Image (cartoon, rainbow, N blue to C red; front, side, top):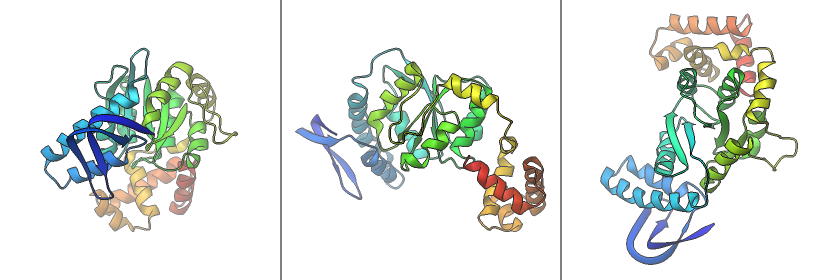
Length: 288
């Protein structure tokens, strides 16, 4: 999609993005995040003032283009993504819009669970499917097992077909890609007002309303993997990479004996007798 932008143009190359003020009318591709992420990556190495000055113009223009047609009541939003760049970009893009308000952001699933347990519930929760401490689907399933709020919208940088079916099973109301910001406002409003954001790429993937998903998931046997602590999950994930107890301990900043305690507790919770069985069951749980 190409939108006409007055007064400046944004030039994107593989290695840089620059904004040139005082140019009359040029076109800016507003199909996704790529130009803005490129600038943000330079934020880590260049001066803050240079990058933020350029970002403000891009974000303001992107915001106007994406939300110009969005009408209706204000919707509260929370975002869970382990990528700080994505969180920063989304916050900058959404802030000051008349129809969306960000209540909080989180880089981990555990932190998001704490927010929700403390009743800091948004209207719509935006969840990345590839979190660092737990699969996004596991977070969604745990939240949906506790109630029909909030509505959940999944997003990912990977092809949607990779996560759509699992997200639907986990009680999510829709899924979008990170490189399609122009769809975000529409998807959030659809999930909030209509109950779901329809997915048409796969006929056998049907997203349920939050109420229907809650009824289904809450009636199912509890998932043992949902009882694992962050430390136990981290120990399993690192062990699954082939690390020894000493290497896992060094990575986690604890003693090897503590790592063995974590894995022993994980084995018990998962109902397995060996670490190998626990790892297999954990890997399966991550993709359910």
